Image 1 (cartoon, rainbow, N blue to C red):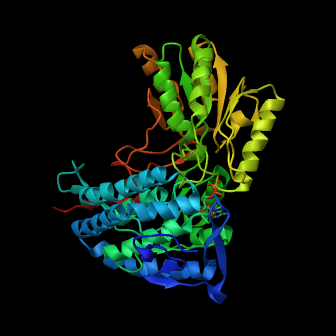
Image 2 (tube, rainbow, N blue to C red):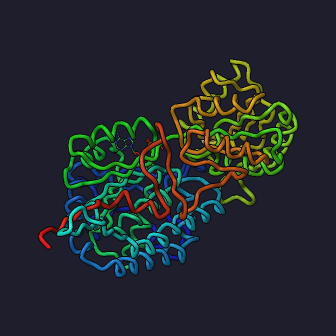
Image 3 (cartoon, rainbow, N blue to C red):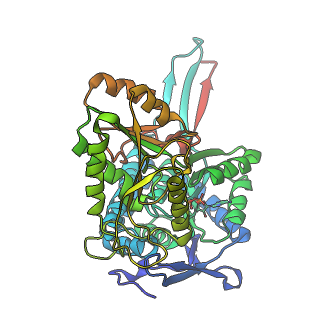
Amino acid sequence: MTLNLNQPDLFRDRAFIDGQWVQAAEARTFPVFNPSTGSTLASVPDLGADETRAAIDAAEKALKPWQALTAKDRATLLRNWFNLILKNQDDLATIMTSEQGKPFAEAKGEVAYGASFVEWFAEEAKRIYGDVIPAHGADKRLLTIKQPIGVVAAITPWNFPIAMITRKVAPALAAGCTVVIKPGEDTPLCALALAELSQQAGIPAGVLNVVTTLQAPEVGRALCEDSRIRKLSFTGSTPVGKLLMRQCADTVKKVSLELGGNAPFIVFDDADVDAAIFGLMASKFRNAGQTCVCTNRILVQDGVHDLFVEKLNAAVRKLKTGDGFGEAVTIGPLINDKAVNKVRGLVNDALANGALITQQNSGTPDNPNFYPPTVLTGVTAGMRIAQEEIFGPVATVFRFTEESEAVELANDTPFGLAAYFYSRDIGRVWRVAEALEYGMVGINEGLISTEVAPFGGIKESGIGREGSRYGIDDFVEIKYLCMGGL
Ligand code: ADP
């Protein structure tokens, strides 16, 4: 099936290694589906460990010449890539909605968001400064320089098929590293379109490689065990992140992990309830609830609980579920029927343990990949839905009385990615912001992601920060130079 693109070259169904579009051994492929219709969009190469090593060979070969460019030259190439991504925003969004399902307007938003990391790190490439350190002896001078860490492996998920790649690849390339990308198996076409644009931008062969595969464990092992890969940057589930970290131990690789979350969204009695509903709708229902910073638990204080639930039901009723290309659609399909079954299982468990459905939309397409937007009230900490990432359009409301109880509930999880709360009391704002054990906190704000701020979690939500001026740190090594005998 071909898509209606202005630039048909963006539709690529081969892997990208050393600047070449390649097939797998024996032309082995796997299908890419449109989750909304179930139709097959493409068949892409199902590469294995040997081809992964070929991609590492290419990245290794490209590393020295790429490092040897001036920062300004690398910045120019990144800026070319940024311009091409934006110029092809509609085509990239068409590919994204087709393979991932999110509404077209949201897909365009992600393309712009993804591009913003390329722009930002094109700028940061020129600001990778070292230090001059006051010396401990009169005959010495001490300095630090920052050097690229080497070949980087980037393993990325399907929920943000462009932004999760650019957020890793742009800082890596800016620092002077080369990369091997293994995109999510549900969304390889966005990754391949980005590779095509990188080539058009003039980024040299071997600097950016894309290994498409259905054999994630085999390819993952080949990347982790290869001593030439000096850094793994992973976004995905916590169990896979832990496995990859273990696999990287033998070669002592630097790892960055963006893993699962269990975001609380606390609404205090003194909150602006309408603003809280507005923030929640974006935080909970964006991408049909399939983001790692999506609200997972809504904690509402007694005094505003009933009003909040009434307004939430009304807001959810307005959501329109359907094909991502459909008019005014705000909720697309989930990525596959396995995801729908997981959400259904969590909701059933909550209902069996005393939760109530106060809103569930009708008019959901008759297709196993869709789940209707739903509001559950009476949710409590012991239910599975309070402990696991829902990754679907289900809002779960808890009730609390005291501020300390809300903070305790919010922190009662092994995860620590994003948290949100609404309050107009300045004392409470500081107290709660400092008490929440999370890497990111939205205060009277439901959308916090931007290329200018550090994204990342604590506890079992991960290691490292992406975006912002800190985002380069994970891709450089600090070298200390001690000059004596002066
Ligand atoms: P999600 O729930 O987002 O699909 P996963 O952790 O399963 O989370 O997937 C994120 C990425 O990790 C995908 O690219 C997937 O193919 C990859 N992946 C899954 N299992 C492994 C593994 N054992 N080794 C390496 N990569 C893996």
